Amino acid sequence: MTPVFPKKMEHFFTLRNKIPLQILLVTLIITVITLSGVRIILPNRPRGRSTTMGLGMGAKSLIILAYEVLTEHSIRFHRWSSLKAYFILNAMEVVFWAAVAFMVIQGNSKLCVGTSCALGWVVFVLAGILSPIYKYLAVVTYLD
Image 1 (cartoon, rainbow, N blue to C red):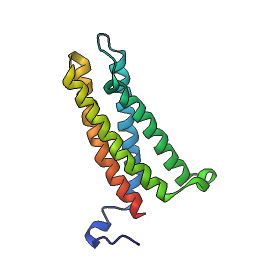
Image 2 (image 1 turned 90 degrees about the horizontal axis):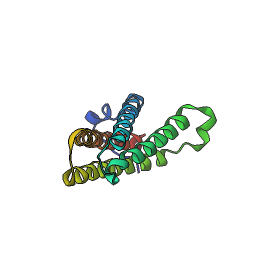
Image 3 (image 1 turned 60 degrees about the vertical axis):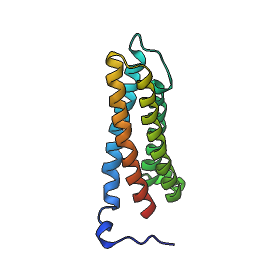
């Protein structure tokens, strides 16, 4: 079954938006990884899931984006490309980054002191931005 979209929406969900979107995602994810790493290094901050979750999710997201870009644009890896896998992975990323945002809120509500608190809120905002971007990317990969 092919999806039916109104003509007004077709230009919004085009494949030419995919590469710039993936570049934006890589920069935001590297920022989250950097800020989460700084939060861990800061003294007088108890380590918990909310501080380390950004590192793990960021690394996972970079691996998934590398898979998508390499299998789409490299002939050597093209045999492993799958449009269904792209859609499933991008749809799962929506939930994962929402979970990062939720965990950071939960961690900051328990204990929020100094620089680590500010970095936590920045990670929350970035995770809140990443989730809808991945939702858009999931729709684009579904319509591909």
